[in-house]
Length: 466
Image (cartoon, rainbow, N blue to C red; front, side, top):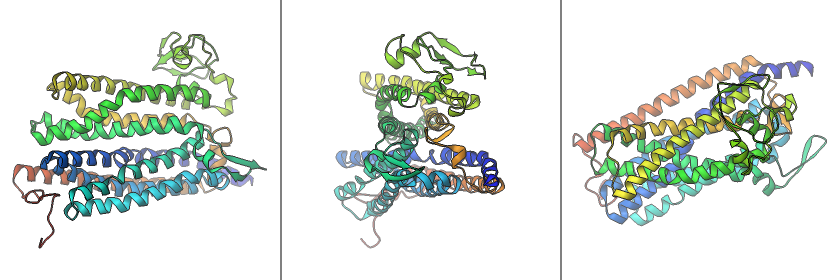
Protein backbone atom coordinates (compact mmCIF):
# COMPACT_ATOMS: atom_id res chain seq x y z
CA UNK A 1 0.00 0.00 0.00
CA UNK A 2 2.80 2.40 0.91
CA UNK A 3 4.56 1.73 -2.41
CA UNK A 4 1.35 2.51 -4.27
CA UNK A 5 1.09 5.87 -2.49
CA UNK A 6 4.68 6.65 -3.41
CA UNK A 7 3.96 5.84 -7.06
CA UNK A 8 0.83 7.99 -6.94
CA UNK A 9 2.86 10.86 -5.50
CA UNK A 10 5.43 10.57 -8.28
CA UNK A 11 2.72 10.60 -10.93
CA UNK A 12 0.95 13.66 -9.52
CA UNK A 13 2.99 16.36 -11.27
CA UNK A 14 3.01 14.80 -14.78
CA UNK A 15 -0.68 13.95 -14.42
CA UNK A 16 -1.55 17.54 -13.59
CA UNK A 17 0.59 18.84 -16.45
CA UNK A 18 -0.96 16.40 -18.92
CA UNK A 19 -4.49 17.28 -17.84
CA UNK A 20 -3.73 20.98 -18.04
CA UNK A 21 -2.22 20.58 -21.51
CA UNK A 22 -5.14 18.64 -22.94
CA UNK A 23 -7.72 20.95 -21.35
CA UNK A 24 -5.92 24.05 -22.63
CA UNK A 25 -5.70 22.54 -26.11
CA UNK A 26 -9.29 21.34 -26.29
CA UNK A 27 -10.80 24.59 -25.00
CA UNK A 28 -9.35 26.37 -28.05
CA UNK A 29 -11.81 24.42 -30.21
CA UNK A 30 -14.86 24.86 -28.02
CA UNK A 31 -15.88 28.44 -28.98
CA UNK A 32 -16.12 27.68 -32.69
CA UNK A 33 -17.60 24.25 -31.97
CA UNK A 34 -20.48 25.71 -29.96
CA UNK A 35 -21.04 29.12 -31.59
CA UNK A 36 -19.98 28.79 -35.25
CA UNK A 37 -23.14 26.85 -36.21
CA UNK A 38 -25.22 29.79 -34.95
CA UNK A 39 -23.14 32.29 -36.91
CA UNK A 40 -23.38 30.11 -40.01
CA UNK A 41 -27.16 29.77 -39.74
CA UNK A 42 -27.54 33.49 -39.17
CA UNK A 43 -25.53 34.19 -42.32
CA UNK A 44 -27.55 31.60 -44.24
CA UNK A 45 -30.77 33.21 -43.01
CA UNK A 46 -29.55 36.59 -44.27
CA UNK A 47 -28.79 35.02 -47.62
CA UNK A 48 -32.26 33.44 -47.90
CA UNK A 49 -34.18 36.46 -46.60
CA UNK A 50 -32.31 39.03 -48.67
CA UNK A 51 -31.69 36.70 -51.60
CA UNK A 52 -28.02 37.54 -51.18
CA UNK A 53 -25.70 35.01 -52.87
CA UNK A 54 -22.69 36.53 -51.10
CA UNK A 55 -24.18 35.71 -47.71
CA UNK A 56 -24.87 32.15 -48.87
CA UNK A 57 -21.28 31.85 -50.05
CA UNK A 58 -20.01 32.99 -46.65
CA UNK A 59 -22.33 30.56 -44.84
CA UNK A 60 -21.22 27.67 -47.06
CA UNK A 61 -17.57 28.39 -46.39
CA UNK A 62 -18.11 28.77 -42.66
CA UNK A 63 -19.90 25.41 -42.64
CA UNK A 64 -16.78 23.77 -44.06
CA UNK A 65 -14.65 25.28 -41.28
CA UNK A 66 -17.32 24.18 -38.79
CA UNK A 67 -17.07 20.59 -39.98
CA UNK A 68 -13.27 20.52 -39.97
CA UNK A 69 -12.96 21.90 -36.45
CA UNK A 70 -15.72 19.54 -35.26
CA UNK A 71 -13.64 16.59 -36.47
CA UNK A 72 -10.56 17.90 -34.64
CA UNK A 73 -12.58 18.61 -31.51
CA UNK A 74 -13.95 15.08 -31.56
CA UNK A 75 -10.41 13.70 -31.38
CA UNK A 76 -9.20 15.98 -28.58
CA UNK A 77 -12.44 15.64 -26.64
CA UNK A 78 -12.30 11.86 -26.77
CA UNK A 79 -8.72 11.86 -25.51
CA UNK A 80 -9.73 14.19 -22.71
CA UNK A 81 -12.56 11.91 -21.62
CA UNK A 82 -10.27 8.88 -21.45
CA UNK A 83 -7.77 10.83 -19.36
CA UNK A 84 -10.18 11.12 -16.46
CA UNK A 85 -10.19 7.36 -16.09
CA UNK A 86 -6.47 6.91 -16.80
CA UNK A 87 -5.04 9.75 -14.70
CA UNK A 88 -7.68 10.07 -11.96
CA UNK A 89 -9.06 6.54 -11.42
CA UNK A 90 -9.88 7.04 -7.73
CA UNK A 91 -12.10 10.00 -8.50
CA UNK A 92 -13.90 8.12 -11.27
CA UNK A 93 -14.15 4.96 -9.18
CA UNK A 94 -15.67 6.82 -6.26
CA UNK A 95 -17.78 9.52 -7.93
CA UNK A 96 -18.19 8.33 -11.51
CA UNK A 97 -21.91 7.68 -11.00
CA UNK A 98 -22.43 11.41 -10.39
CA UNK A 99 -19.56 12.98 -12.32
CA UNK A 100 -20.23 10.86 -15.41
CA UNK A 101 -23.77 12.16 -15.87
CA UNK A 102 -22.60 15.33 -17.58
CA UNK A 103 -20.28 13.45 -19.90
CA UNK A 104 -23.07 11.03 -20.83
CA UNK A 105 -25.16 14.01 -21.91
CA UNK A 106 -22.19 15.47 -23.79
CA UNK A 107 -21.74 12.16 -25.63
CA UNK A 108 -25.37 12.15 -26.78
CA UNK A 109 -25.05 15.76 -27.92
CA UNK A 110 -21.88 14.88 -29.81
CA UNK A 111 -23.54 12.12 -31.81
CA UNK A 112 -26.57 14.29 -32.56
CA UNK A 113 -24.32 17.11 -33.76
CA UNK A 114 -22.21 14.76 -35.89
CA UNK A 115 -25.29 13.39 -37.63
CA UNK A 116 -26.82 16.75 -38.43
CA UNK A 117 -23.54 18.38 -39.46
CA UNK A 118 -23.24 15.62 -42.05
CA UNK A 119 -26.79 16.19 -43.30
CA UNK A 120 -26.26 19.96 -43.30
CA UNK A 121 -23.10 19.76 -45.41
CA UNK A 122 -24.53 17.13 -47.75
CA UNK A 123 -27.77 19.06 -48.09
CA UNK A 124 -26.33 22.29 -49.42
CA UNK A 125 -26.88 21.11 -52.98
CA UNK A 126 -29.71 18.64 -52.39
CA UNK A 127 -32.26 20.31 -50.12
CA UNK A 128 -34.51 23.27 -50.69
CA UNK A 129 -33.44 26.45 -48.86
CA UNK A 130 -36.06 26.21 -46.12
CA UNK A 131 -35.47 22.50 -45.50
CA UNK A 132 -31.72 23.00 -45.39
CA UNK A 133 -32.04 25.87 -42.94
CA UNK A 134 -34.38 23.86 -40.71
CA UNK A 135 -31.89 20.98 -40.62
CA UNK A 136 -29.23 23.44 -39.50
CA UNK A 137 -31.41 24.63 -36.62
CA UNK A 138 -30.62 21.38 -34.80
CA UNK A 139 -26.93 22.27 -34.54
CA UNK A 140 -26.98 25.17 -32.01
CA UNK A 141 -29.10 23.21 -29.47
CA UNK A 142 -26.78 20.22 -29.85
CA UNK A 143 -23.78 22.42 -29.12
CA UNK A 144 -25.53 23.98 -26.13
CA UNK A 145 -26.45 20.54 -24.79
CA UNK A 146 -22.85 19.39 -25.08
CA UNK A 147 -21.60 22.51 -23.32
CA UNK A 148 -24.20 21.97 -20.59
CA UNK A 149 -22.98 18.41 -20.01
CA UNK A 150 -19.32 19.35 -19.66
CA UNK A 151 -20.01 22.41 -17.52
CA UNK A 152 -22.38 20.39 -15.32
CA UNK A 153 -19.53 17.95 -14.61
CA UNK A 154 -17.12 20.80 -13.90
CA UNK A 155 -19.63 22.59 -11.69
CA UNK A 156 -20.13 19.36 -9.74
CA UNK A 157 -16.38 19.28 -9.03
CA UNK A 158 -16.56 22.84 -7.72
CA UNK A 159 -19.77 22.49 -5.67
CA UNK A 160 -20.53 18.75 -5.38
CA UNK A 161 -24.04 17.67 -4.55
CA UNK A 162 -26.69 15.06 -5.18
CA UNK A 163 -24.73 12.13 -3.74
CA UNK A 164 -25.16 10.09 -0.59
CA UNK A 165 -21.91 8.72 0.78
CA UNK A 166 -21.68 5.78 3.18
CA UNK A 167 -18.30 4.50 4.39
CA UNK A 168 -16.54 6.52 1.74
CA UNK A 169 -18.63 5.11 -1.11
CA UNK A 170 -21.46 6.67 -3.10
CA UNK A 171 -24.60 4.68 -2.37
CA UNK A 172 -27.21 6.96 -3.98
CA UNK A 173 -27.26 9.68 -6.65
CA UNK A 174 -29.96 12.30 -7.05
CA UNK A 175 -29.64 12.93 -10.78
CA UNK A 176 -31.16 16.41 -10.85
CA UNK A 177 -29.16 17.65 -7.87
CA UNK A 178 -25.96 16.17 -9.29
CA UNK A 179 -26.53 17.84 -12.66
CA UNK A 180 -27.77 21.19 -11.38
CA UNK A 181 -25.36 22.08 -8.61
CA UNK A 182 -24.98 25.61 -7.25
CA UNK A 183 -22.05 26.48 -9.48
CA UNK A 184 -23.76 25.43 -12.72
CA UNK A 185 -25.91 28.53 -13.10
CA UNK A 186 -23.13 31.06 -13.14
CA UNK A 187 -20.53 28.78 -14.76
CA UNK A 188 -22.82 27.88 -17.64
CA UNK A 189 -23.98 31.37 -18.54
CA UNK A 190 -20.60 33.00 -18.02
CA UNK A 191 -18.81 30.44 -20.18
CA UNK A 192 -21.55 30.21 -22.81
CA UNK A 193 -21.51 33.96 -23.41
CA UNK A 194 -17.71 33.83 -23.50
CA UNK A 195 -17.90 31.16 -26.21
CA UNK A 196 -20.17 33.24 -28.44
CA UNK A 197 -18.10 36.36 -27.86
CA UNK A 198 -14.88 34.51 -28.63
CA UNK A 199 -16.27 32.92 -31.79
CA UNK A 200 -17.57 36.30 -32.92
CA UNK A 201 -14.28 38.08 -32.32
CA UNK A 202 -12.21 35.24 -33.82
CA UNK A 203 -14.21 35.04 -37.04
CA UNK A 204 -14.39 38.83 -37.36
CA UNK A 205 -10.64 39.17 -36.75
CA UNK A 206 -9.96 37.24 -39.97
CA UNK A 207 -11.92 39.78 -41.98
CA UNK A 208 -10.43 42.69 -40.04
CA UNK A 209 -7.06 41.57 -41.39
CA UNK A 210 -8.57 41.44 -44.88
CA UNK A 211 -9.89 45.00 -44.41
CA UNK A 212 -6.40 46.19 -43.42
CA UNK A 213 -5.05 44.56 -46.60
CA UNK A 214 -7.47 46.53 -48.73
CA UNK A 215 -10.24 43.98 -49.33
CA UNK A 216 -13.35 45.97 -48.48
CA UNK A 217 -16.07 44.65 -50.74
CA UNK A 218 -19.51 43.45 -49.69
CA UNK A 219 -18.19 39.96 -48.93
CA UNK A 220 -15.57 41.16 -46.44
CA UNK A 221 -17.78 43.77 -44.80
CA UNK A 222 -20.69 41.39 -44.28
CA UNK A 223 -18.45 38.60 -43.00
CA UNK A 224 -16.94 41.03 -40.50
CA UNK A 225 -20.10 42.83 -39.44
CA UNK A 226 -22.27 39.85 -38.46
CA UNK A 227 -19.93 38.05 -36.02
CA UNK A 228 -18.48 41.26 -34.58
CA UNK A 229 -21.94 42.71 -33.94
CA UNK A 230 -22.97 39.59 -32.02
CA UNK A 231 -19.77 39.66 -29.95
CA UNK A 232 -20.12 43.38 -29.26
CA UNK A 233 -23.79 43.08 -28.27
CA UNK A 234 -22.96 40.31 -25.79
CA UNK A 235 -20.18 42.29 -24.10
CA UNK A 236 -22.34 44.30 -21.67
CA UNK A 237 -24.28 41.14 -20.82
CA UNK A 238 -21.01 39.37 -20.02
CA UNK A 239 -19.90 42.20 -17.76
CA UNK A 240 -23.07 41.77 -15.70
CA UNK A 241 -22.91 37.96 -15.66
CA UNK A 242 -19.21 38.03 -14.78
CA UNK A 243 -19.89 40.33 -11.84
CA UNK A 244 -22.66 38.04 -10.57
CA UNK A 245 -20.41 35.00 -11.04
CA UNK A 246 -17.59 36.50 -9.00
CA UNK A 247 -20.02 37.34 -6.21
CA UNK A 248 -21.39 33.78 -6.26
CA UNK A 249 -17.86 32.34 -6.08
CA UNK A 250 -17.21 34.47 -2.99
CA UNK A 251 -20.13 32.66 -1.35
CA UNK A 252 -19.84 29.13 -2.76
CA UNK A 253 -16.05 28.82 -3.17
CA UNK A 254 -14.53 31.28 -0.70
CA UNK A 255 -11.00 29.81 -0.82
CA UNK A 256 -10.93 30.23 -4.59
CA UNK A 257 -12.20 33.79 -4.27
CA UNK A 258 -9.54 34.58 -1.67
CA UNK A 259 -6.93 33.33 -4.14
CA UNK A 260 -8.42 35.39 -6.96
CA UNK A 261 -8.19 38.55 -4.85
CA UNK A 262 -4.97 37.51 -3.01
CA UNK A 263 -6.75 38.25 0.26
CA UNK A 264 -4.59 36.98 3.11
CA UNK A 265 -6.65 37.81 6.20
CA UNK A 266 -10.40 37.97 6.74
CA UNK A 267 -11.50 41.60 6.94
CA UNK A 268 -13.94 44.27 5.89
CA UNK A 269 -12.95 47.21 3.69
CA UNK A 270 -11.03 44.70 1.62
CA UNK A 271 -9.14 46.34 -1.25
CA UNK A 272 -9.19 45.25 -4.87
CA UNK A 273 -5.60 44.40 -5.85
CA UNK A 274 -4.66 44.84 -9.49
CA UNK A 275 -1.61 42.87 -10.54
CA UNK A 276 1.11 42.01 -8.06
CA UNK A 277 1.84 38.79 -6.24
CA UNK A 278 1.73 37.48 -2.69
CA UNK A 279 4.51 35.80 -0.71
CA UNK A 280 4.35 33.09 1.93
CA UNK A 281 3.90 35.65 4.69
CA UNK A 282 0.87 37.22 3.02
CA UNK A 283 2.58 40.40 1.88
CA UNK A 284 1.53 41.71 -1.53
CA UNK A 285 4.23 43.03 -3.85
CA UNK A 286 3.89 45.26 -6.94
CA UNK A 287 0.11 45.29 -6.77
CA UNK A 288 -2.11 48.37 -7.04
CA UNK A 289 -4.63 48.30 -4.19
CA UNK A 290 -7.93 50.17 -4.58
CA UNK A 291 -9.24 50.68 -1.02
CA UNK A 292 -12.48 48.89 -0.06
CA UNK A 293 -13.41 48.12 -3.68
CA UNK A 294 -13.45 44.35 -3.24
CA UNK A 295 -15.86 44.58 -0.30
CA UNK A 296 -18.03 46.95 -2.32
CA UNK A 297 -18.13 44.56 -5.26
CA UNK A 298 -18.95 41.53 -3.11
CA UNK A 299 -21.60 43.00 -0.83
CA UNK A 300 -22.27 46.52 -2.12
CA UNK A 301 -20.82 47.92 1.08
CA UNK A 302 -17.28 48.66 2.29
CA UNK A 303 -18.25 46.90 5.53
CA UNK A 304 -18.69 43.56 3.76
CA UNK A 305 -16.38 40.96 5.29
CA UNK A 306 -14.31 38.95 2.81
CA UNK A 307 -12.71 35.69 3.97
CA UNK A 308 -8.94 35.47 3.67
CA UNK A 309 -6.65 32.58 2.87
CA UNK A 310 -5.59 32.19 6.51
CA UNK A 311 -9.16 31.29 7.46
CA UNK A 312 -8.60 27.94 5.70
CA UNK A 313 -6.22 25.20 6.78
CA UNK A 314 -2.93 25.40 4.88
CA UNK A 315 -3.54 22.00 3.29
CA UNK A 316 -7.08 22.93 2.22
CA UNK A 317 -6.34 26.00 0.13
CA UNK A 318 -4.19 26.76 -2.94
CA UNK A 319 -0.51 27.16 -2.14
CA UNK A 320 1.31 30.44 -2.75
CA UNK A 321 2.30 29.62 -6.33
CA UNK A 322 -1.22 28.53 -7.18
CA UNK A 323 -2.66 31.68 -5.58
CA UNK A 324 -0.46 33.87 -7.73
CA UNK A 325 -1.33 31.91 -10.87
CA UNK A 326 -5.05 32.25 -10.15
CA UNK A 327 -4.78 35.95 -9.36
CA UNK A 328 -2.79 36.68 -12.52
CA UNK A 329 -5.13 34.61 -14.70
CA UNK A 330 -8.17 36.38 -13.28
CA UNK A 331 -6.61 39.82 -13.85
CA UNK A 332 -5.73 38.89 -17.43
CA UNK A 333 -9.28 37.67 -18.06
CA UNK A 334 -10.87 40.80 -16.62
CA UNK A 335 -8.35 43.08 -18.32
CA UNK A 336 -8.91 41.57 -21.74
CA UNK A 337 -12.66 41.54 -21.16
CA UNK A 338 -12.55 45.25 -20.34
CA UNK A 339 -10.51 45.94 -23.48
CA UNK A 340 -13.06 43.98 -25.52
CA UNK A 341 -15.86 45.99 -23.94
CA UNK A 342 -14.17 49.26 -24.91
CA UNK A 343 -13.66 48.06 -28.50
CA UNK A 344 -17.28 46.88 -28.63
CA UNK A 345 -18.52 50.25 -27.36
CA UNK A 346 -16.52 51.98 -30.11
CA UNK A 347 -18.06 49.69 -32.73
CA UNK A 348 -21.64 49.98 -31.47
CA UNK A 349 -21.38 53.77 -31.19
CA UNK A 350 -20.40 54.09 -34.86
CA UNK A 351 -22.90 51.46 -35.99
CA UNK A 352 -25.89 52.93 -34.13
CA UNK A 353 -25.07 56.62 -34.59
CA UNK A 354 -23.84 56.60 -38.19
CA UNK A 355 -25.42 53.40 -39.56
CA UNK A 356 -22.15 52.16 -40.97
CA UNK A 357 -19.04 50.23 -39.99
CA UNK A 358 -16.05 52.02 -38.47
CA UNK A 359 -13.43 53.22 -40.93
CA UNK A 360 -10.49 53.79 -38.59
CA UNK A 361 -7.47 51.63 -39.28
CA UNK A 362 -6.79 51.59 -35.53
CA UNK A 363 -10.18 50.03 -34.93
CA UNK A 364 -9.45 47.23 -37.40
CA UNK A 365 -5.97 46.73 -35.98
CA UNK A 366 -7.52 46.15 -32.57
CA UNK A 367 -10.31 44.03 -34.08
CA UNK A 368 -7.66 41.87 -35.74
CA UNK A 369 -6.15 41.25 -32.29
CA UNK A 370 -9.50 40.63 -30.62
CA UNK A 371 -9.59 36.97 -31.66
CA UNK A 372 -6.29 36.18 -29.98
CA UNK A 373 -7.27 38.25 -26.95
CA UNK A 374 -10.54 36.35 -26.62
CA UNK A 375 -8.77 33.00 -26.65
CA UNK A 376 -6.31 34.18 -24.00
CA UNK A 377 -9.25 35.36 -21.88
CA UNK A 378 -10.99 31.97 -22.19
CA UNK A 379 -7.80 30.13 -21.24
CA UNK A 380 -7.33 32.47 -18.27
CA UNK A 381 -10.87 31.78 -17.12
CA UNK A 382 -10.27 28.03 -17.14
CA UNK A 383 -7.02 28.48 -15.22
CA UNK A 384 -8.90 30.50 -12.62
CA UNK A 385 -11.56 27.81 -12.29
CA UNK A 386 -9.30 24.76 -12.18
CA UNK A 387 -6.21 25.99 -10.31
CA UNK A 388 -8.37 27.95 -7.87
CA UNK A 389 -10.00 24.69 -6.72
CA UNK A 390 -6.70 23.21 -5.57
CA UNK A 391 -5.83 21.07 -3.65
CA UNK A 392 -9.24 19.50 -4.31
CA UNK A 393 -10.35 17.60 -7.38
CA UNK A 394 -13.82 17.46 -5.81
CA UNK A 395 -14.11 20.50 -3.57
CA UNK A 396 -13.93 19.68 0.12
CA UNK A 397 -14.32 15.96 -0.54
CA UNK A 398 -11.44 14.45 -2.51
CA UNK A 399 -7.94 15.80 -2.96
CA UNK A 400 -6.08 15.71 -6.26
CA UNK A 401 -3.25 13.78 -4.61
CA UNK A 402 -5.71 11.12 -3.44
CA UNK A 403 -7.32 10.71 -6.86
CA UNK A 404 -4.22 10.34 -9.05
CA UNK A 405 -3.25 7.15 -10.83
CA UNK A 406 -0.96 4.46 -9.39
CA UNK A 407 0.84 4.21 -12.72
CA UNK A 408 4.59 4.97 -12.66
CA UNK A 409 5.57 8.56 -13.31
CA UNK A 410 7.60 7.49 -16.34
CA UNK A 411 4.45 6.14 -17.96
CA UNK A 412 2.62 9.44 -17.48
CA UNK A 413 5.59 11.49 -18.72
CA UNK A 414 5.82 9.27 -21.79
CA UNK A 415 2.11 9.59 -22.53
CA UNK A 416 2.40 13.38 -22.10
CA UNK A 417 5.23 13.55 -24.65
CA UNK A 418 3.21 11.37 -27.05
CA UNK A 419 0.18 13.63 -26.64
CA UNK A 420 2.22 16.76 -27.32
CA UNK A 421 3.51 15.22 -30.55
CA UNK A 422 0.02 14.05 -31.60
CA UNK A 423 -1.57 17.41 -30.83
CA UNK A 424 1.22 19.23 -32.68
CA UNK A 425 0.54 17.11 -35.76
CA UNK A 426 -3.21 17.69 -35.46
CA UNK A 427 -2.65 21.44 -35.11
CA UNK A 428 -0.30 21.47 -38.12
CA UNK A 429 -2.73 19.70 -40.43
CA UNK A 430 -5.70 21.70 -39.08
CA UNK A 431 -4.02 25.06 -39.67
CA UNK A 432 -2.60 23.94 -43.02
CA UNK A 433 -6.06 22.89 -44.19
CA UNK A 434 -7.60 26.21 -43.13
CA UNK A 435 -4.86 28.13 -44.94
CA UNK A 436 -5.40 26.10 -48.11
CA UNK A 437 -9.15 26.64 -47.91
CA UNK A 438 -8.61 30.40 -47.51
CA UNK A 439 -6.24 30.45 -50.49
CA UNK A 440 -8.70 28.53 -52.64
CA UNK A 441 -11.53 30.87 -51.72
CA UNK A 442 -9.42 33.92 -52.51
CA UNK A 443 -8.60 32.47 -55.94
CA UNK A 444 -12.29 31.86 -56.56
CA UNK A 445 -13.16 35.42 -55.55
CA UNK A 446 -10.49 36.85 -57.82
CA UNK A 447 -11.74 34.79 -60.77
CA UNK A 448 -8.56 32.74 -61.11
CA UNK A 449 -10.53 29.57 -60.39
CA UNK A 450 -14.15 28.79 -61.07
CA UNK A 451 -16.22 29.51 -58.00
CA UNK A 452 -18.43 26.51 -57.13
CA UNK A 453 -21.04 28.86 -55.69
CA UNK A 454 -21.82 30.29 -59.14
CA UNK A 455 -24.47 28.96 -61.47
CA UNK A 456 -26.78 27.27 -58.95
CA UNK A 457 -29.94 28.63 -57.32
CA UNK A 458 -28.94 27.51 -53.85
CA UNK A 459 -25.78 26.09 -52.30
CA UNK A 460 -22.29 25.94 -53.70
CA UNK A 461 -22.34 22.99 -56.04
CA UNK A 462 -24.97 21.40 -58.22
CA UNK A 463 -25.41 17.65 -58.38
CA UNK A 464 -23.87 16.17 -61.56
CA UNK A 465 -26.54 15.46 -64.10
CA UNK A 466 -29.12 17.78 -62.57
